[in-house]
Length: 256
Image (cartoon, rainbow, N blue to C red; front, side):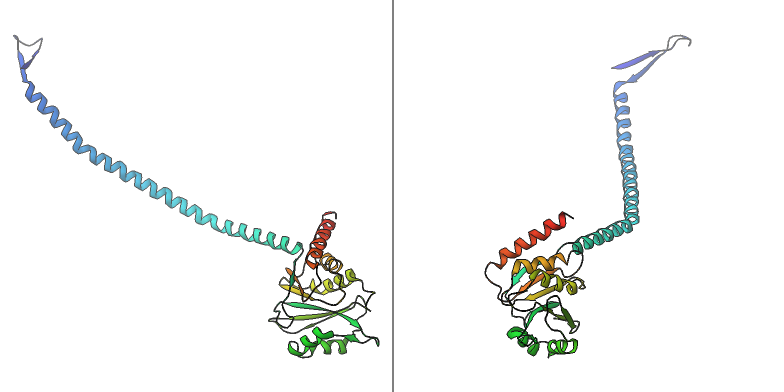
């Protein structure tokens, strides 16, 4: 089959014959050339996309790097706020049955009574602790300061920078007339100087746990140890007494 094309304005009648096979071949060549060119275009597009992605990622990395100091500052500010909140919170109170000479916290409180002559008595636990742990420093503190174990009196001795670092002696007065809230508040007056860590209050006969814990927690609202341990053989029901004391102090603080 052939195609004829007439041209007007030309002398005579001319016909142009183009074989359809040749036309088909031309179209195939054109398609092939397009296909050959198209992969190159695709490659160029892909290359441009990769370059754009790399540029975008680099920009993001740079921006992230630039913002990182702000993030660190933000973390520092959050950490400081958390530390302030922790300092403003009351320390955690728990019972501990560890022997006083084996306890390795930061500060320990001994509650002492005077004997019939007015001389402070370390008692069995205090005497043992002074012998095996503090090398006589507790008795020396009592002798040097004139501590008489009267209600509301306290003295503290620093032992070192590791292990048990401080021991405080708190006077509670004669048996039967103790003010245990006052005893706790007196202990807190020294314990609030601690910057975190742990403190322990050694058991004494006749102690009223709830009143004691209320007194010490009321004085440790803004500073002091992070944990407070009641050390030794405290009486039955002491766990419940601690919970009541914590609740009472918490309610009182919320009402301020």
